[in-house]
Length: 186
Image (cartoon, rainbow, N blue to C red; front, side, top):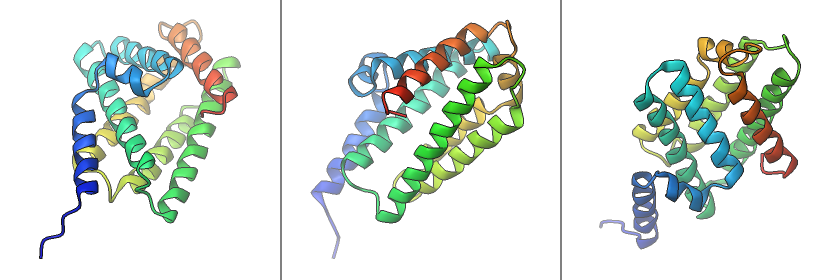
C-alpha cells in the first residue's frame, strides 16, 4: 500500500515554491533587514572578487534558498532530537565564525585564512549532516557551492586586506554580524 501524507506533500510544495521565489522582495518576507544588508554586501564582495555578476547572483540565491528551506523544516518540526543537536552545533560554529570574522576585521593583521577556512568548512559539513535526510542532492550542492565560494583563500585574502578594494564591504558585513550577535539572532 502506498504511503501518502498530505502534511509531507504540503511541506514539499512549500519548499518547492519557496526555492523558486528567491527574489529580493520574497526574501524580505523571510529575512530581516540586517541579514538582507549582509546578503547584499556578500553579493557585492562576490561580484567584485570574481568579476562575474551571474556567479555572484547564483551564490547568494543558493544561500537564500538553503536558508529558507532550513527555516521551513525547522518551523515544521522536521528535525529529530539528534538533528536538533546538530542544529545547535551549527549555530555555535556559525556564531564562532561571526565572532572570528569581526575580530579579524577589527584588529589589523590578525587575519588567518586557515582559521577562517576551517570554520567555514566545519559549518558546511555540519549543515550537510543536518539536512542529509531532508533536502535533495541539488540543495546539498547549493550548500557546498556557497561555503566553497566564501571559503576561497583568494577571496578571503582580498576581503581582509587592510584598505583593500573589498575592505568597505567587510566593514559593513561585520557591522551587520555584530548587530545580529547583539540581538541574539546569531
